[in-house]
Amino acid sequence: MPQPRSPQTVAAANGIATDSAFRAVAPPVHLSSSYAFGGFGRAGRYDYTRSGNPTRDLLADTLAKLEAGAGAVVVSSGMAAIDLVLSGLEPGDLVVAPHDCYAGTWRLLNARRAKRQFEARFVDQTDGEALAAALACGPKLVLVESPSNPLMRIVDIRETAARARSAGAKVVVDNTFLSPALQQPLRLGADLVVHSTTKYLNGHSDVVGGAVVAADPADVEALASWANVTGVTGAPFDAYLTLRGLRTLFARVERQQRTAAELARFLQRHPAVRTVHYPGLATHPGHEVAKAQQHGFGAMLSFEIADGAEAARRFCEAVEVFTLAESLGGVESLVAHPATMTHASMDPETRRAAGINDGLLRLSVGLEGEADLRDDLAGALARSTDR
Image (tube, rainbow, N blue to C red):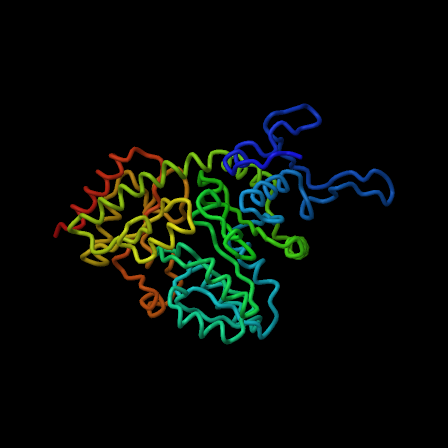
């Protein structure tokens, strides 16, 4: 029996040197849309790429191994992954979601609720009483985002999964911010994990994709079947590029989170910064939970600039190494202003209730030199306070 492999080995080597045609070390990309039958009524393992593709299947297998799941379904975007999970709900079913979730998720849940496809309730999942009240309503699905986007709130996944199971609900965790390099929600009791593979898994800001990993083979089968029905499966070349990026996941994340921790400490000391949201700081309210359920604190952080929206604008216009752009998890460092970018689709009242104010900035820390990034922050903060 083969020995269990470490996650680092799985990421670097799953599928390597398995090409039976030419013994290629790197797995080839299979771009064909269709596959020849062996004869009348004799379909092979693959017949049409929407239904199945060797390159996409290798990525799915790798992700399932990394997340300790029974299988995975690779789709066209992170939002398609969220929507695929929601596809199992019936009219009248309830979804409990974070009140401070990614605005794209918030928008999708509200849009489908408006079509009466299910009900949705947004709660602060770090508030035990609020979560208990929501679970008492008998939800079918609890959606967890930990760390949350953009405020880096930490939800106790093990406890939430146990409570949700007692209430008869399945739990899906958005693991995009940490990736399986730093957190494996299925091992903590979750039923499903979703990813925007666009982010850390690909890591190079040149592919859009998503994935759902399930603990139960029956869920894998149902999700794969519906993805085929709706045609949301990912493209083979996108899967190939994502798998190529995945090979360096652990090395990238290790370096990125080390730099992020240093920048968080720098920002915490800076007089122009009101608050830093980074679970690696001992002052973060979710620090102990994060330390218990994660293998590291990640490379995402946010901070509130003291002088509000105008100072945030000046900061974003002053950065030189950081790039003002949406998305995250790439090798380059990005800064985003959630109120006008990633969370602009949220109405102002909802943003305020979630704690997303106009002075909040989100950083995705890349692989540039730590000193260059720190100096860039220092310079932009100095210019943000200029009148």
